[in-house]
Length: 103
Figure 1 (cartoon, rainbow, N blue to C red):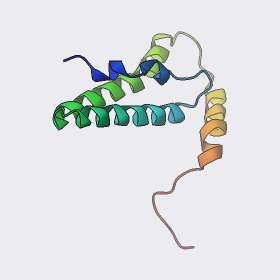
Figure 2 (figure 1 turned 30 degrees about the horizontal axis):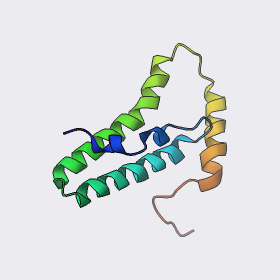
Figure 3 (figure 1 turned 135 degrees about the horizontal axis):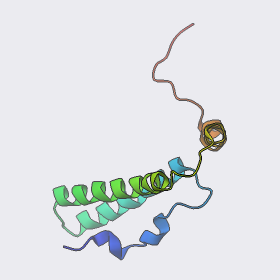
């Protein structure tokens, strides 16, 4: 069976140049969830749909990481990377607490 996701606009899943990884992963998740819903609505077996969805998500999320590793001969400025992450993500969302404490 061919991947049903190919019928949908996969080219829209490419990460935009200045898009934070977290925002892109949310787009991927939403896109793949919709593809899976369409497959289920067409009567495809749940287990197969979930397996294909998880495979596609894993492939998409690993691709930019693996490409970065492949190009890892380029020096990485860790401080600049941390600052960019903080500005793009943490400044908007803030750190999340996994507990509540009363002072």
